[in-house]
Image (cartoon, rainbow, N blue to C red; front, side):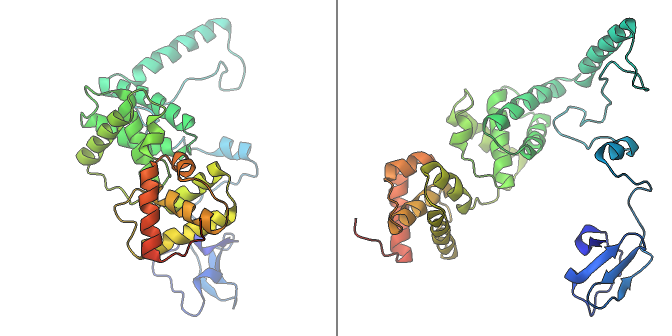
Length: 311
């Protein structure tokens, strides 16, 4: 039995009389059943899954008749097959002569995978983006999003005459913004040679030419990382998040650097709870200037009417 959210629903289904969260799908009978009343909500549902069963991951891999999902990290999206290993279809090792031939075919296939200049550039960018993601300890899912952005920029001719490293870093930063990962452009610029100015220029070019709509970053996402760097208590993290939620409701976060707002909220929360940290320490952990922390701190205290203990 799987829940309603885990199984596809047919068109025209009716749910009157039973809350959706209590409806489950019986895979054996092909029926949607209400667990409160036992009523069959819908029957004879078409099973869209495979006709075979597998009880182990190895058995599932062996019986599956589909390939790997498409990926933007390869010039051909991963459509072409890859020659790998030195065994035949039955799992037996190849003879020495056949191993040499397989090695030659593998090198030839690697060359044919990327033939045009754009495909070769995308192949190099995939390696650079993977390096950046690993250096910044970002989720692996960022790689595919960043490669999708970089591929669009390359196909539009935006990478011509520009540093591949800076364009790759800009694509990673754009992917972090889209996926809601709290990383500033300064964090990403630290692991590239071009510097912040060049990465920022490439990022603005990508956003403008590809017409990307970047979501507004929630300052609350920065709180956990800054608190962890300063070794503050979970109580400070919760209080800082509450301050930022109040500030957002009053419209105080619009147009402000989210890292600076998070740093100011943490400074206020630390003062309230007696875990004092200097503005210099908090600014260094957040990657902003002391002036930013001081200005945001004064604004939050004044607008939210936060009483602070005597310093």
